[in-house]
Length: 612
Image 1: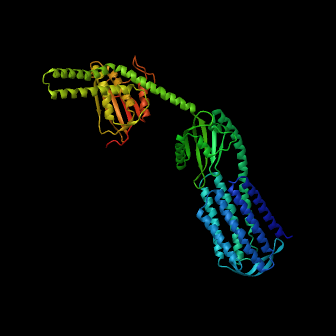
Image 2: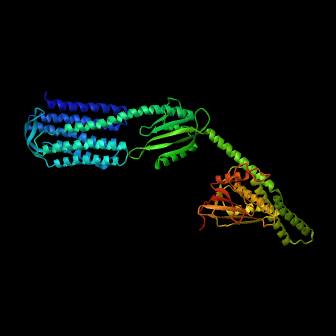
Image 3: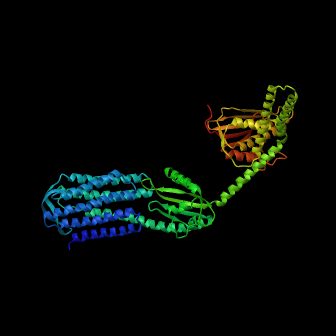
Protein backbone atom coordinates (compact mmCIF):
# COMPACT_ATOMS: atom_id res chain seq x y z
CA UNK A 1 0.00 0.00 0.00
CA UNK A 2 1.37 3.43 -1.00
CA UNK A 3 1.91 6.37 1.31
CA UNK A 4 -0.78 8.30 -0.58
CA UNK A 5 -3.34 5.61 0.15
CA UNK A 6 -2.27 5.46 3.80
CA UNK A 7 -2.47 9.25 4.30
CA UNK A 8 -5.80 9.81 2.51
CA UNK A 9 -7.37 6.75 4.10
CA UNK A 10 -6.14 7.90 7.50
CA UNK A 11 -7.57 11.39 6.88
CA UNK A 12 -10.93 9.87 5.97
CA UNK A 13 -10.84 7.65 9.08
CA UNK A 14 -9.94 10.60 11.33
CA UNK A 15 -12.74 12.70 9.89
CA UNK A 16 -15.17 9.80 10.30
CA UNK A 17 -14.12 9.40 13.94
CA UNK A 18 -14.76 13.10 14.60
CA UNK A 19 -18.13 12.70 12.92
CA UNK A 20 -19.06 9.84 15.25
CA UNK A 21 -17.93 11.77 18.36
CA UNK A 22 -19.84 14.95 17.58
CA UNK A 23 -22.90 13.04 16.41
CA UNK A 24 -22.93 11.34 19.81
CA UNK A 25 -22.66 14.75 21.49
CA UNK A 26 -25.65 15.98 19.49
CA UNK A 27 -27.68 12.87 20.31
CA UNK A 28 -27.07 13.45 24.01
CA UNK A 29 -27.98 17.15 23.72
CA UNK A 30 -30.29 17.97 20.82
CA UNK A 31 -29.61 21.67 21.41
CA UNK A 32 -25.91 21.17 20.53
CA UNK A 33 -26.48 22.20 16.92
CA UNK A 34 -22.84 23.29 16.34
CA UNK A 35 -21.76 19.71 17.12
CA UNK A 36 -24.17 18.38 14.50
CA UNK A 37 -22.81 20.86 11.93
CA UNK A 38 -19.23 19.84 12.74
CA UNK A 39 -20.18 16.16 12.37
CA UNK A 40 -21.53 16.92 8.87
CA UNK A 41 -18.33 18.79 7.99
CA UNK A 42 -16.34 15.75 9.11
CA UNK A 43 -18.38 13.18 7.18
CA UNK A 44 -18.26 15.33 4.04
CA UNK A 45 -14.46 15.48 4.37
CA UNK A 46 -14.47 11.68 4.41
CA UNK A 47 -16.22 11.75 1.02
CA UNK A 48 -13.80 14.39 -0.31
CA UNK A 49 -10.79 12.29 0.75
CA UNK A 50 -12.31 9.16 -0.83
CA UNK A 51 -12.94 10.81 -4.24
CA UNK A 52 -9.60 12.67 -4.19
CA UNK A 53 -7.73 9.41 -3.52
CA UNK A 54 -9.42 7.81 -6.52
CA UNK A 55 -8.46 10.83 -8.68
CA UNK A 56 -4.78 10.27 -7.78
CA UNK A 57 -5.11 6.53 -8.49
CA UNK A 58 -6.98 7.00 -11.80
CA UNK A 59 -5.67 5.06 -14.81
CA UNK A 60 -7.37 7.11 -17.55
CA UNK A 61 -8.58 10.62 -18.31
CA UNK A 62 -12.21 9.47 -18.21
CA UNK A 63 -11.65 7.81 -14.85
CA UNK A 64 -10.05 10.99 -13.46
CA UNK A 65 -12.92 13.20 -14.76
CA UNK A 66 -15.46 10.76 -13.30
CA UNK A 67 -14.10 11.19 -9.76
CA UNK A 68 -13.88 14.98 -10.15
CA UNK A 69 -17.59 14.94 -10.94
CA UNK A 70 -18.42 12.96 -7.80
CA UNK A 71 -16.16 15.11 -5.62
CA UNK A 72 -18.61 18.00 -6.04
CA UNK A 73 -21.28 16.24 -3.95
CA UNK A 74 -19.27 16.07 -0.66
CA UNK A 75 -17.89 19.55 -1.48
CA UNK A 76 -21.44 20.95 -1.56
CA UNK A 77 -22.22 19.32 1.80
CA UNK A 78 -18.91 20.56 3.22
CA UNK A 79 -19.39 24.23 2.28
CA UNK A 80 -23.03 24.26 3.36
CA UNK A 81 -22.09 22.72 6.72
CA UNK A 82 -19.31 25.30 7.22
CA UNK A 83 -21.61 28.32 6.79
CA UNK A 84 -24.22 26.75 9.07
CA UNK A 85 -21.55 25.91 11.65
CA UNK A 86 -20.35 29.54 11.69
CA UNK A 87 -23.91 30.80 12.15
CA UNK A 88 -24.67 28.33 14.96
CA UNK A 89 -21.34 28.43 16.80
CA UNK A 90 -20.57 32.15 16.55
CA UNK A 91 -24.19 33.24 16.66
CA UNK A 92 -23.50 35.79 13.91
CA UNK A 93 -23.40 35.94 10.13
CA UNK A 94 -25.55 37.53 7.46
CA UNK A 95 -28.49 35.29 6.66
CA UNK A 96 -28.85 36.41 3.06
CA UNK A 97 -25.18 35.73 2.36
CA UNK A 98 -25.38 32.29 3.97
CA UNK A 99 -28.30 31.22 1.77
CA UNK A 100 -26.65 32.77 -1.29
CA UNK A 101 -23.61 30.54 -0.78
CA UNK A 102 -25.75 27.43 -0.27
CA UNK A 103 -27.76 28.23 -3.41
CA UNK A 104 -24.61 28.79 -5.50
CA UNK A 105 -23.05 25.48 -4.39
CA UNK A 106 -26.34 23.69 -5.11
CA UNK A 107 -26.38 25.14 -8.63
CA UNK A 108 -22.79 23.93 -9.10
CA UNK A 109 -23.76 20.36 -8.09
CA UNK A 110 -26.79 20.31 -10.39
CA UNK A 111 -24.89 21.68 -13.40
CA UNK A 112 -22.01 19.32 -12.58
CA UNK A 113 -24.17 16.21 -12.98
CA UNK A 114 -25.92 17.58 -16.06
CA UNK A 115 -22.60 18.23 -17.84
CA UNK A 116 -20.95 15.77 -20.19
CA UNK A 117 -17.68 15.80 -18.26
CA UNK A 118 -18.03 17.77 -15.00
CA UNK A 119 -18.53 21.33 -13.81
CA UNK A 120 -14.84 22.29 -14.02
CA UNK A 121 -13.86 20.88 -17.43
CA UNK A 122 -15.43 20.86 -20.86
CA UNK A 123 -13.23 17.85 -21.58
CA UNK A 124 -10.20 16.07 -20.11
CA UNK A 125 -7.92 14.95 -22.90
CA UNK A 126 -5.04 13.27 -21.10
CA UNK A 127 -3.55 12.57 -17.70
CA UNK A 128 0.01 11.91 -16.64
CA UNK A 129 1.77 10.58 -13.55
CA UNK A 130 4.15 12.38 -11.24
CA UNK A 131 6.00 11.27 -8.15
CA UNK A 132 4.24 12.44 -4.95
CA UNK A 133 5.05 11.23 -1.43
CA UNK A 134 7.29 8.63 -3.00
CA UNK A 135 4.50 7.28 -5.21
CA UNK A 136 3.24 7.78 -8.78
CA UNK A 137 -0.08 9.70 -8.80
CA UNK A 138 -2.35 10.78 -11.67
CA UNK A 139 -2.56 14.45 -12.68
CA UNK A 140 -4.32 16.15 -15.56
CA UNK A 141 -1.97 17.16 -18.37
CA UNK A 142 -4.36 18.20 -21.12
CA UNK A 143 -7.93 19.47 -21.02
CA UNK A 144 -10.25 22.44 -21.56
CA UNK A 145 -11.36 24.36 -18.48
CA UNK A 146 -15.03 25.40 -18.44
CA UNK A 147 -15.93 29.13 -18.28
CA UNK A 148 -18.22 28.15 -15.39
CA UNK A 149 -15.17 27.75 -13.17
CA UNK A 150 -15.35 31.49 -12.32
CA UNK A 151 -18.71 30.82 -10.68
CA UNK A 152 -17.13 28.19 -8.40
CA UNK A 153 -14.26 30.54 -7.57
CA UNK A 154 -16.73 33.29 -6.65
CA UNK A 155 -18.64 30.94 -4.33
CA UNK A 156 -15.41 30.04 -2.54
CA UNK A 157 -14.54 33.72 -2.07
CA UNK A 158 -18.05 34.40 -0.71
CA UNK A 159 -17.52 31.66 1.90
CA UNK A 160 -14.38 33.44 3.12
CA UNK A 161 -16.15 36.83 3.12
CA UNK A 162 -19.05 35.33 5.09
CA UNK A 163 -16.74 33.83 7.74
CA UNK A 164 -14.68 37.03 8.13
CA UNK A 165 -17.81 39.17 8.41
CA UNK A 166 -19.33 36.87 11.06
CA UNK A 167 -16.08 36.85 13.06
CA UNK A 168 -15.89 40.67 12.89
CA UNK A 169 -19.45 40.95 14.23
CA UNK A 170 -18.53 38.65 17.12
CA UNK A 171 -15.31 40.60 17.77
CA UNK A 172 -17.27 43.85 18.16
CA UNK A 173 -19.04 42.42 21.20
CA UNK A 174 -15.75 43.15 22.97
CA UNK A 175 -15.75 40.10 25.24
CA UNK A 176 -12.49 38.13 25.63
CA UNK A 177 -14.03 34.70 25.02
CA UNK A 178 -15.92 35.94 21.97
CA UNK A 179 -12.76 37.48 20.51
CA UNK A 180 -10.82 34.24 21.04
CA UNK A 181 -13.58 32.28 19.34
CA UNK A 182 -13.76 34.74 16.43
CA UNK A 183 -10.01 34.57 15.78
CA UNK A 184 -9.69 30.78 16.02
CA UNK A 185 -12.75 29.93 13.91
CA UNK A 186 -12.13 32.53 11.20
CA UNK A 187 -8.42 31.71 10.92
CA UNK A 188 -9.06 27.96 11.01
CA UNK A 189 -11.50 28.20 8.11
CA UNK A 190 -10.25 31.09 5.96
CA UNK A 191 -6.51 30.35 5.92
CA UNK A 192 -6.79 26.69 4.98
CA UNK A 193 -9.73 27.25 2.65
CA UNK A 194 -7.62 29.86 0.85
CA UNK A 195 -4.74 27.38 0.51
CA UNK A 196 -7.05 24.72 -0.85
CA UNK A 197 -8.75 27.09 -3.30
CA UNK A 198 -5.40 28.38 -4.60
CA UNK A 199 -4.02 24.89 -5.14
CA UNK A 200 -7.22 23.66 -6.81
CA UNK A 201 -7.58 26.68 -9.09
CA UNK A 202 -3.96 26.39 -10.25
CA UNK A 203 -4.54 22.77 -11.23
CA UNK A 204 -7.90 23.41 -12.95
CA UNK A 205 -6.58 26.36 -14.97
CA UNK A 206 -3.50 24.34 -15.95
CA UNK A 207 -0.99 26.64 -14.30
CA UNK A 208 0.71 23.81 -12.44
CA UNK A 209 0.74 20.03 -12.85
CA UNK A 210 0.02 18.48 -9.46
CA UNK A 211 -2.78 16.78 -7.50
CA UNK A 212 -5.60 19.07 -6.38
CA UNK A 213 -4.81 18.49 -2.66
CA UNK A 214 -8.21 19.45 -1.22
CA UNK A 215 -8.08 17.07 1.73
CA UNK A 216 -4.92 18.19 3.66
CA UNK A 217 -5.92 21.85 4.28
CA UNK A 218 -9.53 20.83 4.93
CA UNK A 219 -8.34 18.25 7.46
CA UNK A 220 -6.26 20.89 9.29
CA UNK A 221 -9.26 23.25 9.28
CA UNK A 222 -11.48 20.48 10.67
CA UNK A 223 -8.91 19.76 13.40
CA UNK A 224 -8.82 23.43 14.44
CA UNK A 225 -12.60 23.55 14.72
CA UNK A 226 -12.68 20.26 16.63
CA UNK A 227 -10.03 21.50 19.11
CA UNK A 228 -12.01 24.72 19.65
CA UNK A 229 -15.20 22.70 20.24
CA UNK A 230 -13.25 20.44 22.60
CA UNK A 231 -12.09 23.51 24.50
CA UNK A 232 -15.72 24.47 24.96
CA UNK A 233 -16.54 20.93 26.07
CA UNK A 234 -13.79 20.96 28.71
CA UNK A 235 -14.87 24.37 29.90
CA UNK A 236 -18.47 23.17 30.05
CA UNK A 237 -17.33 20.20 32.15
CA UNK A 238 -15.54 22.46 34.62
CA UNK A 239 -18.54 24.75 34.65
CA UNK A 240 -20.81 21.77 35.29
CA UNK A 241 -18.77 20.84 38.37
CA UNK A 242 -18.94 24.41 39.58
CA UNK A 243 -22.65 24.53 38.89
CA UNK A 244 -23.22 21.32 40.84
CA UNK A 245 -21.51 22.86 43.86
CA UNK A 246 -23.41 26.07 43.30
CA UNK A 247 -26.63 24.08 43.00
CA UNK A 248 -26.05 22.53 46.42
CA UNK A 249 -25.45 25.94 47.99
CA UNK A 250 -28.42 27.37 46.14
CA UNK A 251 -30.73 24.63 47.37
CA UNK A 252 -29.47 25.19 50.91
CA UNK A 253 -30.02 28.95 50.65
CA UNK A 254 -33.42 28.44 49.03
CA UNK A 255 -34.56 26.10 51.80
CA UNK A 256 -33.37 28.54 54.46
CA UNK A 257 -35.18 31.48 52.85
CA UNK A 258 -38.18 29.39 51.71
CA UNK A 259 -37.67 30.25 48.04
CA UNK A 260 -38.57 28.10 45.08
CA UNK A 261 -36.83 28.13 41.67
CA UNK A 262 -38.30 27.27 38.30
CA UNK A 263 -37.46 27.47 34.58
CA UNK A 264 -39.47 27.07 31.39
CA UNK A 265 -37.71 26.09 28.15
CA UNK A 266 -40.03 27.27 25.36
CA UNK A 267 -38.09 25.35 22.70
CA UNK A 268 -39.06 22.03 24.24
CA UNK A 269 -42.03 23.24 26.29
CA UNK A 270 -40.31 21.77 29.37
CA UNK A 271 -40.75 23.09 32.91
CA UNK A 272 -38.33 22.40 35.76
CA UNK A 273 -39.09 23.31 39.37
CA UNK A 274 -37.52 22.73 42.77
CA UNK A 275 -39.34 20.86 45.49
CA UNK A 276 -40.29 24.11 47.21
CA UNK A 277 -41.90 25.44 43.99
CA UNK A 278 -43.83 22.21 43.55
CA UNK A 279 -45.08 22.44 47.14
CA UNK A 280 -46.41 25.96 46.58
CA UNK A 281 -48.54 24.71 43.67
CA UNK A 282 -49.47 21.45 45.37
CA UNK A 283 -47.55 19.27 42.88
CA UNK A 284 -46.01 15.86 43.54
CA UNK A 285 -42.16 15.71 43.57
CA UNK A 286 -41.97 13.58 40.39
CA UNK A 287 -45.11 14.80 38.66
CA UNK A 288 -44.55 16.19 35.11
CA UNK A 289 -45.39 19.89 34.93
CA UNK A 290 -47.19 21.62 32.08
CA UNK A 291 -48.34 25.18 31.52
CA UNK A 292 -51.97 24.10 31.53
CA UNK A 293 -51.46 22.43 34.91
CA UNK A 294 -49.96 25.59 36.42
CA UNK A 295 -52.66 27.75 34.85
CA UNK A 296 -55.34 25.59 36.45
CA UNK A 297 -53.83 26.28 39.91
CA UNK A 298 -53.75 30.08 39.45
CA UNK A 299 -56.74 32.19 40.53
CA UNK A 300 -58.90 32.99 37.50
CA UNK A 301 -58.84 36.74 38.26
CA UNK A 302 -55.00 36.80 38.12
CA UNK A 303 -54.36 34.91 34.83
CA UNK A 304 -54.81 37.94 32.57
CA UNK A 305 -52.60 40.06 34.85
CA UNK A 306 -49.80 37.47 34.72
CA UNK A 307 -50.04 37.33 30.93
CA UNK A 308 -49.79 41.12 30.69
CA UNK A 309 -46.71 41.17 32.95
CA UNK A 310 -44.89 38.61 30.77
CA UNK A 311 -45.86 40.46 27.57
CA UNK A 312 -44.32 43.66 28.99
CA UNK A 313 -41.19 41.73 29.99
CA UNK A 314 -40.79 40.33 26.46
CA UNK A 315 -41.34 43.74 24.86
CA UNK A 316 -38.90 45.53 27.19
CA UNK A 317 -35.80 44.37 29.08
CA UNK A 318 -36.89 40.83 29.97
CA UNK A 319 -37.21 41.34 33.76
CA UNK A 320 -40.56 40.68 35.39
CA UNK A 321 -42.18 40.81 38.85
CA UNK A 322 -45.72 39.67 39.61
CA UNK A 323 -47.91 38.68 42.55
CA UNK A 324 -50.80 36.25 42.16
CA UNK A 325 -53.03 33.83 44.06
CA UNK A 326 -52.65 30.07 43.83
CA UNK A 327 -55.25 27.37 44.64
CA UNK A 328 -53.53 24.04 45.46
CA UNK A 329 -55.82 20.97 45.41
CA UNK A 330 -55.13 20.52 49.11
CA UNK A 331 -54.82 23.49 51.46
CA UNK A 332 -55.84 27.14 51.52
CA UNK A 333 -55.35 29.75 48.81
CA UNK A 334 -51.84 31.23 48.81
CA UNK A 335 -50.41 34.55 47.66
CA UNK A 336 -47.20 34.00 45.65
CA UNK A 337 -44.61 36.51 44.49
CA UNK A 338 -42.54 35.65 41.41
CA UNK A 339 -39.52 37.50 40.07
CA UNK A 340 -37.17 36.56 37.26
CA UNK A 341 -36.08 37.20 33.70
CA UNK A 342 -36.77 36.14 30.14
CA UNK A 343 -33.83 34.93 28.02
CA UNK A 344 -33.93 35.53 24.29
CA UNK A 345 -32.47 33.47 21.43
CA UNK A 346 -30.46 34.69 18.41
CA UNK A 347 -33.66 35.64 16.55
CA UNK A 348 -34.87 37.74 19.47
CA UNK A 349 -37.56 35.25 20.49
CA UNK A 350 -37.94 34.16 24.13
CA UNK A 351 -36.36 30.73 24.63
CA UNK A 352 -36.05 30.47 28.43
CA UNK A 353 -37.91 31.91 31.40
CA UNK A 354 -36.45 31.56 34.87
CA UNK A 355 -37.77 32.81 38.16
CA UNK A 356 -37.97 32.67 41.95
CA UNK A 357 -41.18 31.92 43.85
CA UNK A 358 -41.94 33.07 47.39
CA UNK A 359 -45.00 32.53 49.57
CA UNK A 360 -46.21 35.99 50.70
CA UNK A 361 -49.53 34.89 52.20
CA UNK A 362 -48.51 36.05 55.69
CA UNK A 363 -47.36 39.38 54.27
CA UNK A 364 -50.68 39.87 52.48
CA UNK A 365 -52.60 39.02 55.63
CA UNK A 366 -50.52 41.52 57.59
CA UNK A 367 -51.24 44.17 54.94
CA UNK A 368 -54.97 43.49 55.20
CA UNK A 369 -54.82 43.71 58.98
CA UNK A 370 -52.85 46.96 58.73
CA UNK A 371 -55.41 48.36 56.28
CA UNK A 372 -58.23 47.39 58.65
CA UNK A 373 -56.39 49.02 61.56
CA UNK A 374 -55.82 52.13 59.45
CA UNK A 375 -59.55 52.29 58.68
CA UNK A 376 -60.32 51.89 62.37
CA UNK A 377 -57.91 54.70 63.30
CA UNK A 378 -59.33 56.89 60.55
CA UNK A 379 -62.83 56.27 61.86
CA UNK A 380 -61.70 57.01 65.42
CA UNK A 381 -60.07 60.21 64.19
CA UNK A 382 -63.32 61.32 62.58
CA UNK A 383 -65.29 60.58 65.73
CA UNK A 384 -62.76 62.49 67.86
CA UNK A 385 -62.76 65.42 65.47
CA UNK A 386 -66.55 65.57 65.46
CA UNK A 387 -66.51 65.57 69.24
CA UNK A 388 -64.34 68.66 69.12
CA UNK A 389 -66.79 70.23 66.64
CA UNK A 390 -69.92 69.24 68.59
CA UNK A 391 -70.84 72.77 69.73
CA UNK A 392 -70.24 74.23 66.30
CA UNK A 393 -72.35 71.53 64.68
CA UNK A 394 -75.13 72.08 67.20
CA UNK A 395 -75.07 75.77 66.28
CA UNK A 396 -75.07 74.87 62.58
CA UNK A 397 -78.20 72.75 63.08
CA UNK A 398 -79.92 75.18 65.43
CA UNK A 399 -80.09 77.89 62.78
CA UNK A 400 -82.21 76.01 60.19
CA UNK A 401 -84.28 74.32 62.92
CA UNK A 402 -84.99 77.68 64.59
CA UNK A 403 -85.92 79.20 61.24
CA UNK A 404 -88.27 76.27 60.54
CA UNK A 405 -89.93 76.76 63.95
CA UNK A 406 -90.41 80.51 63.43
CA UNK A 407 -91.83 80.03 59.94
CA UNK A 408 -94.17 77.34 61.22
CA UNK A 409 -95.44 79.65 64.01
CA UNK A 410 -95.96 82.46 61.48
CA UNK A 411 -97.89 80.12 59.23
CA UNK A 412 -100.06 79.05 62.15
CA UNK A 413 -100.90 82.69 62.90
CA UNK A 414 -101.83 83.35 59.27
CA UNK A 415 -104.04 80.28 59.14
CA UNK A 416 -106.05 81.48 62.18
CA UNK A 417 -107.09 84.64 60.31
CA UNK A 418 -110.48 84.58 58.45
CA UNK A 419 -108.78 85.24 55.08
CA UNK A 420 -105.15 84.05 55.16
CA UNK A 421 -102.67 85.47 52.63
CA UNK A 422 -102.01 82.47 50.36
CA UNK A 423 -98.99 84.06 48.64
CA UNK A 424 -97.27 84.70 51.96
CA UNK A 425 -98.06 81.17 53.09
CA UNK A 426 -96.36 79.85 49.93
CA UNK A 427 -93.23 81.88 50.75
CA UNK A 428 -93.23 80.56 54.32
CA UNK A 429 -93.53 76.95 53.09
CA UNK A 430 -90.73 77.58 50.58
CA UNK A 431 -88.49 78.92 53.37
CA UNK A 432 -89.31 75.88 55.50
CA UNK A 433 -88.28 73.57 52.63
CA UNK A 434 -84.97 75.40 52.16
CA UNK A 435 -84.16 75.30 55.87
CA UNK A 436 -85.13 71.64 56.03
CA UNK A 437 -82.76 70.79 53.15
CA UNK A 438 -80.04 72.81 54.82
CA UNK A 439 -80.41 70.83 58.05
CA UNK A 440 -80.57 67.60 56.07
CA UNK A 441 -77.30 68.44 54.30
CA UNK A 442 -75.57 68.97 57.62
CA UNK A 443 -76.89 65.66 58.94
CA UNK A 444 -75.82 63.84 55.71
CA UNK A 445 -72.29 65.19 56.10
CA UNK A 446 -72.20 64.02 59.71
CA UNK A 447 -73.48 60.58 58.75
CA UNK A 448 -70.87 60.24 55.97
CA UNK A 449 -68.04 61.29 58.25
CA UNK A 450 -69.11 58.89 61.00
CA UNK A 451 -69.47 55.94 58.61
CA UNK A 452 -66.55 53.47 58.63
CA UNK A 453 -65.63 52.30 55.11
CA UNK A 454 -62.87 51.76 52.55
CA UNK A 455 -61.72 54.26 49.95
CA UNK A 456 -64.29 54.86 47.20
CA UNK A 457 -62.55 56.80 44.44
CA UNK A 458 -64.66 59.00 42.18
CA UNK A 459 -64.20 62.29 40.30
CA UNK A 460 -64.81 65.35 42.45
CA UNK A 461 -64.21 69.10 42.33
CA UNK A 462 -61.86 70.80 44.78
CA UNK A 463 -64.04 73.91 45.16
CA UNK A 464 -66.99 71.81 46.43
CA UNK A 465 -64.66 70.05 48.87
CA UNK A 466 -63.43 73.38 50.25
CA UNK A 467 -67.02 74.66 50.57
CA UNK A 468 -68.16 71.57 52.48
CA UNK A 469 -65.19 71.75 54.86
CA UNK A 470 -65.73 75.45 55.53
CA UNK A 471 -69.45 74.82 56.19
CA UNK A 472 -68.62 72.30 58.92
CA UNK A 473 -65.91 74.31 60.69
CA UNK A 474 -66.90 77.95 60.10
CA UNK A 475 -69.20 78.14 63.14
CA UNK A 476 -66.51 76.69 65.43
CA UNK A 477 -63.93 79.13 64.05
CA UNK A 478 -66.31 82.07 64.56
CA UNK A 479 -67.05 80.95 68.13
CA UNK A 480 -63.30 81.05 68.82
CA UNK A 481 -62.94 84.45 67.14
CA UNK A 482 -60.91 83.11 64.21
CA UNK A 483 -61.51 84.42 60.69
CA UNK A 484 -61.78 81.63 58.09
CA UNK A 485 -61.02 82.64 54.49
CA UNK A 486 -61.54 80.06 51.75
CA UNK A 487 -60.82 80.38 48.06
CA UNK A 488 -60.92 77.72 45.32
CA UNK A 489 -61.10 78.40 41.61
CA UNK A 490 -64.07 76.63 39.99
CA UNK A 491 -61.97 76.06 36.85
CA UNK A 492 -59.57 73.71 38.65
CA UNK A 493 -59.43 70.20 37.15
CA UNK A 494 -61.22 67.33 38.83
CA UNK A 495 -59.39 64.85 41.05
CA UNK A 496 -60.10 61.18 41.68
CA UNK A 497 -60.67 60.86 45.43
CA UNK A 498 -62.78 59.51 48.25
CA UNK A 499 -64.83 62.53 49.30
CA UNK A 500 -65.35 61.53 52.92
CA UNK A 501 -61.70 60.70 53.62
CA UNK A 502 -60.44 63.79 51.82
CA UNK A 503 -62.97 65.95 53.69
CA UNK A 504 -61.70 64.46 56.95
CA UNK A 505 -58.12 65.44 56.09
CA UNK A 506 -59.03 69.02 55.15
CA UNK A 507 -61.19 69.50 58.26
CA UNK A 508 -58.39 68.11 60.43
CA UNK A 509 -55.89 70.58 58.92
CA UNK A 510 -58.29 73.52 59.35
CA UNK A 511 -59.12 72.58 62.98
CA UNK A 512 -55.38 72.28 63.76
CA UNK A 513 -54.83 75.72 62.18
CA UNK A 514 -57.65 77.19 64.26
CA UNK A 515 -56.13 75.65 67.41
CA UNK A 516 -52.72 77.13 66.55
CA UNK A 517 -54.23 80.56 65.89
CA UNK A 518 -56.18 80.64 69.18
CA UNK A 519 -52.89 80.82 71.08
CA UNK A 520 -52.19 84.28 69.63
CA UNK A 521 -53.05 87.23 71.88
CA UNK A 522 -53.84 90.77 70.70
CA UNK A 523 -53.43 89.89 67.02
CA UNK A 524 -55.66 89.14 64.08
CA UNK A 525 -56.54 85.48 64.12
CA UNK A 526 -56.91 84.13 60.59
CA UNK A 527 -56.88 80.80 58.78
CA UNK A 528 -56.70 80.79 54.99
CA UNK A 529 -57.61 77.83 52.73
CA UNK A 530 -56.55 78.19 49.09
CA UNK A 531 -56.70 75.72 46.19
CA UNK A 532 -54.68 76.20 43.01
CA UNK A 533 -53.17 74.30 40.11
CA UNK A 534 -49.66 72.86 40.70
CA UNK A 535 -48.19 72.43 37.26
CA UNK A 536 -50.29 70.63 34.65
CA UNK A 537 -50.82 67.37 36.51
CA UNK A 538 -51.61 68.25 40.15
CA UNK A 539 -53.91 70.35 42.30
CA UNK A 540 -52.60 71.88 45.54
CA UNK A 541 -54.56 72.88 48.65
CA UNK A 542 -52.78 75.09 51.21
CA UNK A 543 -53.98 75.69 54.78
CA UNK A 544 -52.20 78.71 56.31
CA UNK A 545 -52.58 80.02 59.87
CA UNK A 546 -51.40 83.19 61.58
CA UNK A 547 -50.01 81.38 64.60
CA UNK A 548 -46.46 81.11 65.90
CA UNK A 549 -45.43 78.36 63.48
CA UNK A 550 -43.80 75.00 64.17
CA UNK A 551 -40.48 74.75 66.01
CA UNK A 552 -37.50 73.38 64.06
CA UNK A 553 -37.21 70.48 66.54
CA UNK A 554 -40.87 69.52 66.10
CA UNK A 555 -41.24 70.02 62.33
CA UNK A 556 -39.54 66.73 61.24
CA UNK A 557 -41.73 64.68 63.60
CA UNK A 558 -45.23 66.14 63.31
CA UNK A 559 -46.39 63.36 60.95
CA UNK A 560 -45.09 60.53 63.17
CA UNK A 561 -47.79 58.36 64.79
CA UNK A 562 -48.54 59.18 68.44
CA UNK A 563 -46.47 62.37 68.33
CA UNK A 564 -48.47 65.43 69.42
CA UNK A 565 -47.90 68.92 70.78
CA UNK A 566 -51.43 69.13 72.26
CA UNK A 567 -52.07 68.22 75.87
CA UNK A 568 -55.26 66.32 74.92
CA UNK A 569 -54.17 65.09 71.48
CA UNK A 570 -53.79 61.45 70.41
CA UNK A 571 -50.96 62.10 67.91
CA UNK A 572 -52.78 60.27 65.10
CA UNK A 573 -54.52 63.04 63.16
CA UNK A 574 -51.64 64.12 60.93
CA UNK A 575 -50.26 60.57 60.59
CA UNK A 576 -53.64 59.28 59.38
CA UNK A 577 -54.04 62.34 57.12
CA UNK A 578 -50.71 61.71 55.40
CA UNK A 579 -51.63 58.02 54.92
CA UNK A 580 -54.93 59.01 53.31
CA UNK A 581 -53.29 61.51 50.95
CA UNK A 582 -50.57 59.03 49.92
CA UNK A 583 -53.29 56.44 49.25
CA UNK A 584 -54.70 58.99 46.79
CA UNK A 585 -51.32 59.26 45.04
CA UNK A 586 -50.57 62.69 46.53
CA UNK A 587 -48.29 64.36 49.11
CA UNK A 588 -48.82 66.11 52.43
CA UNK A 589 -46.11 68.21 54.04
CA UNK A 590 -45.69 71.26 56.30
CA UNK A 591 -43.43 74.27 56.49
CA UNK A 592 -43.24 77.60 58.29
CA UNK A 593 -44.38 80.73 56.48
CA UNK A 594 -42.00 83.56 55.74
CA UNK A 595 -44.13 86.02 57.80
CA UNK A 596 -44.98 83.62 60.62
CA UNK A 597 -47.46 80.82 61.08
CA UNK A 598 -47.47 77.35 59.50
CA UNK A 599 -48.48 76.23 56.02
CA UNK A 600 -49.71 72.71 55.29
CA UNK A 601 -49.52 71.70 51.62
CA UNK A 602 -51.63 68.92 50.15
CA UNK A 603 -51.26 67.88 46.47
CA UNK A 604 -53.48 65.50 44.52
CA UNK A 605 -53.10 64.22 40.91
CA UNK A 606 -55.58 65.81 38.52
CA UNK A 607 -57.77 63.79 36.19
CA UNK A 608 -57.33 66.35 33.42
CA UNK A 609 -54.74 69.02 32.70
CA UNK A 610 -54.94 72.20 34.68
CA UNK A 611 -55.99 75.24 32.65
CA UNK A 612 -53.19 77.41 31.31
